[in-house]
Amino acid sequence: MIMLTIDTSTFALSVAVVDHDRTIGEWTTHLKKNHSIRLMPAVRMLLEECDLSLQDLDAVAVAKGPGSYTGVRIGLMTAKSLAWAAGLPLYGVSSLSVLAANARGSQLISPFMDARRGQVFTGLYRFENGKLMQEKPDQIRMHDDWLHELAAGGEPVTLISPDYSKHQELISQTLGELELPAHAQDHLPRASSIAMLAAEQNPYKNVHDAVPEYLRLAEAEAKWREAHGK
Image (tube, rainbow, N blue to C red; front, side, top):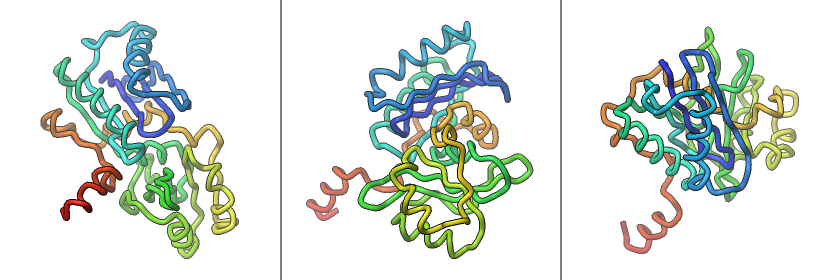
């Protein structure tokens, strides 16, 4: 099954074409540029490089969040539009699971993304028999509290995040030798990992059923609801 995969849930923009477990092509950048302008040209360029068209695809899969509200929405809307236009099944996977898939070994894996105000989007994963399993659900937490919870567990853990450098000092102070560092290149999401994750689940029954997984209301919506007593 040839699958187009998309992840725009962080500053990184990653697209890939995967045939079963073989990556045909992948393109990833980590730039503070507008995903809405760059995503479709990236998809077109990748398909052309792989000598493929939309009609050659068997499915589309996307990182559905959490992450940047704008980035998640752009990726999901683009994936929905492509799947609907070509009559293809659409899969949605956790953006945190895409990061976790970069880890190696059998230790705990805690992917995270900065959610501002000392908070992070995070979860807990582990590989078992070659499959990525979720130990704790994706959630939004105060980062300090989450790290102390991991430390109290006393088990080695790998933390993976495009925002890792921003939090490195706190992580080192809290976890110490319990942290098993990831390779530098593993802190960016890779769209090719989405295919492996999508293979473990069912597609949406209808592409229009796909919705972003924000884990919290967008700030503007939250303020509106507060002002209107919702």
